[in-house]
Image 1 (tube, rainbow, N blue to C red):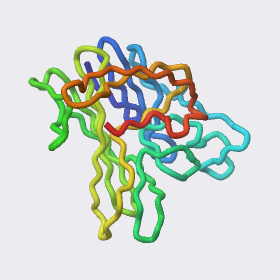
Image 2 (cartoon, rainbow, N blue to C red):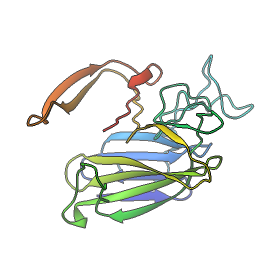
Image 3 (cartoon, rainbow, N blue to C red):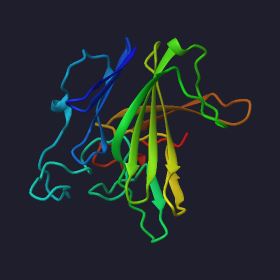
Length: 227
């Protein structure tokens, strides 16, 4: 189990004996997902996994560059606007009526164990050696809201626990109308989605759903979780 960061390529690699989770800072300083699956060998550069290409009828971030469109890139925490028109992971209503956010990467920290989610049911560790947690720090410079994205990878089994935390460091109040604990852009289609549903005394009631959608047609099933 380890969390590695390459300063030159701005890439994070979380892995244990079973899985690898790789993400990078995109050209617009948003966080992008590169790989999530079976454990792969660590490399200094995973830029070849970033799928940039000209696409018809797409909006682009940079003038003169027809390769970077957030609508077609897998992201760690999608926001509305800025060339991404899918369902966002977060929506913040500002006093001027705007709902557009621009959370850009500012830094990170790595700590042993798993932070406690105060007041919320969550997985936990009894010893710090059982897991390691990466915290990504992103900020919207207009609203001065800081976003912390937590990634805890456990030493055993292919498990990554995720959560998000918002801190309003601005001078105005805002209305947080949507805040998901994670965003998972699916790179393909034809998935089995298994989750626990139910009611009191039968909470661990497994349900299985068939997902047949790709990154370009995910709509409201982009892969967000509100749990």
